[in-house]
Length: 174
Image (cartoon, rainbow, N blue to C red; front, side):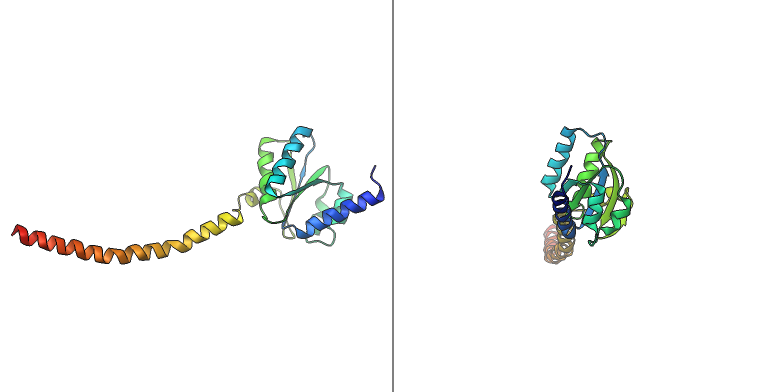
């Protein structure tokens, strides 16, 4: 049984994490073993995702006043909350990947920057590139025209040299 002070501390902690988060995923974990939950927590920690099992009444209080207040009406059953502070897709990636191998973990709530999404949108959110991947793709797209211009400009003198060599070969053959 939690004391009032413990409950206040939990609400304050979750509220602080939610105010800094970009996305939130809540999933039903009923039927997962302790070993599986420990594995999920480990994966979340490695991805920089805040993961916590919180009573729904405390979670409703914690998200009230944050941009995730949209999830309050969707909270039902035993849920584990995952919040992504930096990468908006990190929580979705961790939960979706874990749910693929553990059918007892069922994603129930997905919210991105204050907008409630359908639970099946977690898969789409998980496929979003990370910040580093997006920057890498952007740099490749920006570099391609410059490389093509350099190859095109380099082709002009090369073509001239080949033409002069062909004329020389023609005159030598004649």
